[in-house]
Image (cartoon, rainbow, N blue to C red; front, top):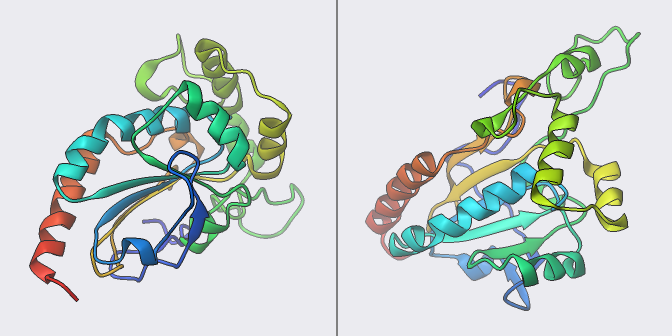
Length: 234
């Protein structure tokens, strides 16, 4: 990983969390999962079409992951009631947790993009001292869904329109406050340690919206499940 990405790395302990669940009731914490490996995706809010697609991918993978002994969690940067409303129409077997302040993202070390002042003397470095010019020049087209690559903000608009997803005031507020949050994926083994980690756009804005494939997740989860089984009870 780039040195600018300070996400937790394999071998480090997963941070404690306790978050309300939008689709199973109550709260879910790291302590609840102790002894069981799990995949946790730390997403932006439901306003993000790339995150909604990844949540659908999690839904499709959940049976295979559960068969391998790996639980599946998605943390979304969306308030609980808004998430519950969305999940009434887009249900998922994945446990969806709500963290509208992105505290869990920060605890796992998933960065948000911070643009450096245009006249600042600091070296421009993605994502913590990013150049706005670099971001403005970026063009993306994950999964080739659009007719041609577009600026990341335009891509959001195009895909939301394609999905028929209309942002409400809650979504717009989350976007305004946390719109530059990046996405992170972590597999945690049965001992509570990070076993695999991926962070979105680690090398620059051209990677925005490009998230781990099903094949990558299944391969990593298989390794974690075997490792956790070999560790035995603790």
